[in-house]
Length: 374
Length: 142
Image 1 (cartoon, rainbow over the protein chains, first blue to last red):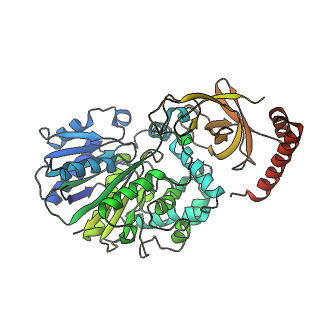
Image 2 (image 1 turned 120 degrees about the vertical axis):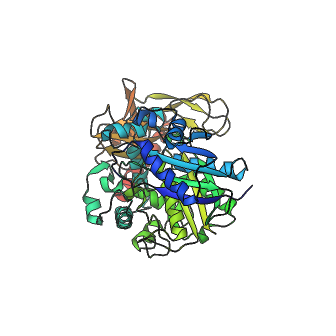
Image 3 (image 1 turned 45 degrees about the vertical axis):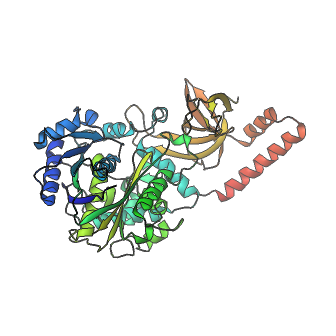
């Protein structure tokens, strides 16, 4: 297996955007290529979760490649629901690691804010088991079930969950590309509108537009892909025995650490999939970054805040940076690259190893990626 | 009163799923037909205040572990006072399943119908009541 390097990384401002998705993806892609000092890649991997429904457009790899001015470059699309960006990164990694390509552009994005929220919720929910959807199960509904089970086991408290959102908003305030840049308080989280009892509005990430891109290369650059792993689980939540942790994350982390040849002790900054605040607490333990049962306490103690032992979601996470579905897995990796190369102005951690964790569906297709400064 | 719910069981790992599936989600083997009783324990529940298109708020959804092992997703009319671990019965109305709390008397009737010997019945009823009191006093979750 050849070594794989991240030669360029870029993303758009995340939020409510009026531009077409292809323009957002072009902005990120061209900036990543400029960063890599390349005129063009020798292959393109595109990540979009559901442009057919959100936009009415299909054949999206060709759509994006043509829009970018790379109609003659081989292009394919990768989809694993909300973790599509991380999956596309894996496909690009595999192409370079196998020696099939020398410079792969991986670009992901989503555009949703032009649709009404109940429609977006229903469309995202199509990644849920069809039988469970017949009962109105949406992502917030299933996350509500997970959260209730966590609280019943006394695994986390409402205050610990709220603190995740407060911390990530504080981080987002330092990120000029974040969807939300205003701080919030624990009291505001606990008083916000109930969405899926016991989850409230400010426990949940927003609906966002945006795009992110990286260039993966065979030639040495400043950041190396140290390890990457996928973990999977049953589509139906009712077919699982475990509700309060995600085996798909545990399996992905195990695979990524095995490839890297080191464990969680070397990770100094992490971007975790906090689509719902308690998911960050679950991910902290599933990835081994915090011992079992300690994630809530570590969060309250500021260990995972900027300036703490292990800053988590310095970008603001899905909660504050925003969650443009297929862009998210790549936006996490872009933040990790910037943290490793000293380009995260205003929120710089100073780390040599970064971890990114992405959840697809309700933890049916999860990814853990480890990046290391050269 | 107890409904029988169609399910399937994996001959390899004994995972039981309802409604029945052709293949086991974890093994590429055909599942065998099975049936589970429509009583069980609340694994978790939520109330959706912004349900998706086609549903009205508030929408109560529960995950129930049925006797026999299958976990089942269903609706309820109400979740006030409901706790994780509570005993519920589930019942189909127009092919949609709903859960309802089991009161002490309902539970006694259920055990009366199920248990084989008079002594078993009394023991089962007593265990059920004791479990209810215990859960009621220590199952606080909010």
